[in-house]
Image 1 (spheres, chains in turn cyan, yellow):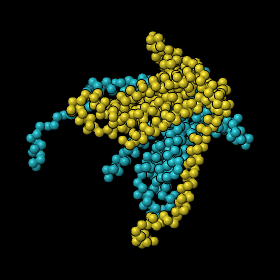
Image 2 (cartoon, rainbow over the protein chains, first blue to last red; image 1 turned 30 degrees about the horizontal axis):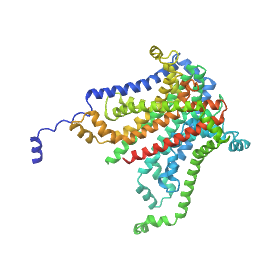
Image 3 (tube, rainbow over the protein chains, first blue to last red; image 1 turned 135 degrees about the vertical axis):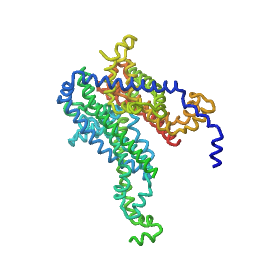
Image 4 (cartoon, each protein chain N blue to C red; image 1 turned 120 degrees about the vertical axis):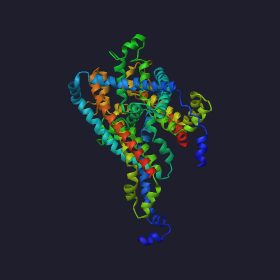
Length: 292
Length: 287
């Protein structure tokens, strides 16, 4: 009671000055909108306008050409294969790094970021140096009828290297935060390691695995630098969609390049929107469980 | 059974003792699988390229790297990467602040736009610049009037490099900016600090490791870009040829030693950058 009355007696606290003066706030806001507008939105608009300039019929016929269709199909198939492999191996790697202690763990943890740092073209050159037909390993594989470079296994390999970090880096923090007590409770009541993983650990990290896999898939769809070196780029066989776009630009076929670009952009955009949605849903779940 | 568990003081420890050997085996197997996978995917190619670049002797390697073409390519890469990093750091800070602190209609669209360079294939990024600044481009009349040649020249390479590395600073700074205590900023403001002083002396020190992490990622990405740069550069050696373009041309010319040598140089550079990245990341996570 007395507290309330003293509060009434004292003058209201001085209003805290806004973090930034209004004109400064407007200046920053306009700068941000202009920069992203000119650097990102305008180029996107240009590609949409160019791809659709002769109407939808021309757009479809550009995409339905055998070379374009085969390139798109190859890209999606490769991306799916790579995403599945790295979803499994990435989850396993994250689990091993977080839960086990062994020699070389720190090195492995640092090495995983390598594909983020090393230029993708260099990755391609490296794979050619290892599996190229004139190399020891490549020649040995060739003599056993396995072609890696200038064939689809090379594309898969390049994409595996490039996308290795994605699932690991999304799963790792979630695994670190996961309550060990739940796992220990599962062991205590007699669950095997495998049961514990499937029933307790996996449900916790599943959203992170999905997010990482989607990012991995998006990256695999657009990859150029490493693929252009290892694939051989034979139309209809080892020509991926981004390399197809490059070829169309080189031969001044801008509309066909735009059409394929629009398809790739739409796919990546849908993936990113899905990832954002998943992440915001996760955050909401976290807040809800924290409030309980 | 349940009776026994209730009575036992440390059931987990007791249970763990029996299948301990099997668990250890599974543990070693999992570690081995992961190490083999990582070694096959990341280490083996690295070894192969170092091997390949010295295959024709160290002399050939050195000759390729100190050739005029290679040196000017490295210089151009450094110039472009530094330029793109500086520009994206300044604008990135500004955009990160707006995304973290400001609120207005369309902010979500802005937030989505930031991620687009991650989603766009680099080739498409380069193609966009051609559509804007090439023949009959939307902005060609403006750049022509100003007397600037963009496509097949340095400005085009710079714009391409900037485009593909926009998100890094923003994506690293926004979360740390969200964590910075507003109380300290408000305290500085009430004591009469200007907004610039508050930013300079309160906000910036708090976000510095996250910022530096983003900056190093930007630089790494800018050094290694090929797709976007390949489309816009025109690849005139000694003029518009970056280090990655040098590799690309060497591969086309069947100059394997040149390609390998430059690739090794870039790999070493990226390793140094990677160590810097890891250092900043650890500092950022500690704060």
